[in-house]
Image (cartoon, rainbow, N blue to C red; front, side, top):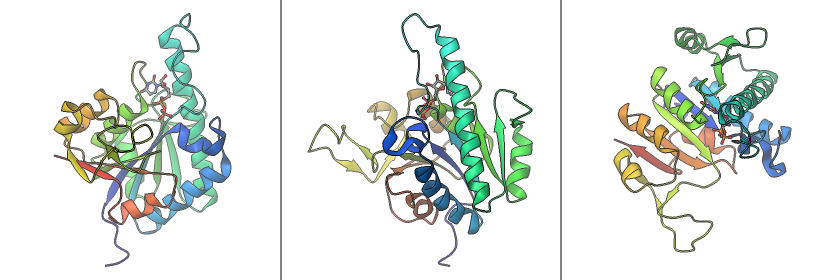
Length: 237
Ligand code: UDP
């Protein structure tokens, strides 16, 4: 029927950048609220929702060549935990039940990531926000999204970005860039299309996780995506 979501369980990847709005740094709460309102609509139609948050709005990579890469990545993962807590807070204020699970233990603040418990939360109608990426340096939150999507058997990985889909070349640089409606995982890797880093893309291919890449400048696209409206670019096997 009209109010039936297309997907039973989703893994939504929100980049840190998306949470910063026009400020580009830190959190822009009106922007976070708009995003969360769309997530709430998905929640209300009964879709089970896992969210992986990025951290690029606070921290990305090393501050300089002198900085130890592993330590820089530790800081980056802590940044994602801050975003996870902020998104949880807004979702709760909108009436959602939410749990935050982190890949690095911080038990006074959040639950540790335990796959079975996350699944149990979904079954009880709770949104689960996954913080701290994979918990390991040298990875990205896109890899964490691909990993969690596989672990929780998500029907789709929704990658909300700053462009309205996947193009053959950068649409911000080339006027004649062509958008794809659909692609295979293999095409992404062979053509090195900029969707996510290659580790994340390879993981999605291995596990046959479909990906929908779409534009978050219109926050309600999250809901439209869940309802199966034709937006963005879909990547499948
Ligand atoms: N990070 C990491 N391991 C992970 C996920 C993230 O070390 O599994 C660190 C890494 O330093 C990264 C930062 O956290 O630059 C923020 O994550 P990301 O750049 O993926 O965030 P986004 O671009 O989605 O905002």
